[in-house]
Amino acid sequence: MNLQEVQNNWDEFGRRDPFWAILTHAQFKNNRWDPAAFFETGRREVEILLRHLQEIGVPFSCRRALDFGCGAGRLSQALCAWFHCVAGVDIAPSMIALANQYNTFGTRCRYLLNPAQDLRVLGAQRFDFVLSLIVLQHLRPEYSKHFIREFIRVLAPAGIAVFQIPSRPSRPPAARPPVAELPWAACRADLSLLRPVGLVHAGEAFEVSVRVRNRSGLAWPCSGRSDGHGLVQLGNHWRNEDGTLLAADDARALLPFDLAAGAHVDLTLSVNAPDSQGTYFLELDMVEEGIAWFADRGSQLLCQKVQVAASDRERAPRGFPVMEMHGVPKEEIYRVVAQSGGRVLNATQDQSAGGWESFLYTVAKA
Image 1 (cartoon, one colour):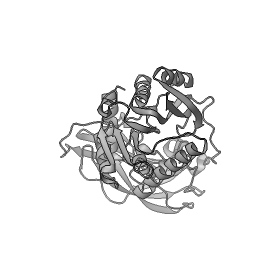
Image 2 (tube, helix red, strand yellow; image 1 turned 120 degrees about the vertical axis):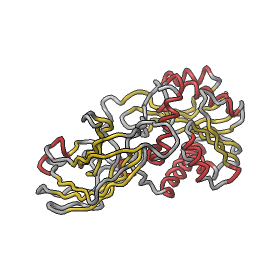
Image 3 (cartoon, one colour; image 1 turned 90 degrees about the horizontal axis):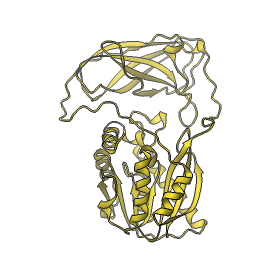
Image 4 (cartoon, one colour; image 1 turned 60 degrees about the vertical axis):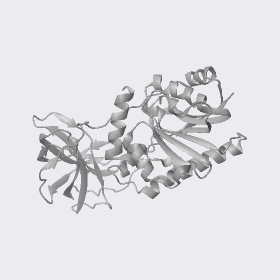
């Protein structure tokens, strides 16, 4: 995607499910992040990172810091505990609006919209510290490499930049702690609507109440791995009126407890209507996250015809947002940094890009 497409997609993520788009844990999809818990993750990450720099003897000034790809301000707010002034830049207007909403540091923290291919809006040699985590991986390499050059340009003399970016897909695919896959015989569900789905508006979220009955002879667990793999959840697809698949993966609703054989539970799923008016089919099914949909193992899904009216919001339809992943080889990062007047002090492998070999780089301006 070019930067305009990136902006469109992330602006839509910011409207639909901003915290999950930043920290994509399956159990928090569909606006289930608690804001306090979300921002606490940033506080912990920044504290661990900066204390580590102090421990290994990497000096940094605590005057001005930049958070590149600030999103809702998760890291920017945390940086304010360490730096006198913090600036956050992001490509998505909806994310900048959210960051301003959650800014608790007044003028000490400012947020700027930056849809450009560079950081000219910030000027040169302005910052003592630049931080960017789980951002560059969503940009094509020609963009991410140029922004790394920009990090060094906006650093003050002796400034430090810390950024994360994948190198290449893991070989073999990233090892996963074992999850006990449900037997096929356990993947049997009866789904029924607790109330009809009325007319909905294009692009809007609406709630669907569903009674889920475990009609197998085995219990369904409500827990899985910490990244959500193996969770048994209610989910949905969208199909066009002619039956073609429009969206294979939309929303999720977690089981609140282990569901015994024969037992039922009532769940509420907040789904996102298609972006154009018309007639669609909403398909509801249970899924063992990352493993299989129950319908693929013989269970009967619930299909509901839904009428979608024109949106009452004055904005163009955007479609379901897309989150791309890209990497830049480690040796290429070293070359880009050196050519830009920087020096890599440290490159530590991290686990923030599932399925990719990823590194956290600490760079000093020469």
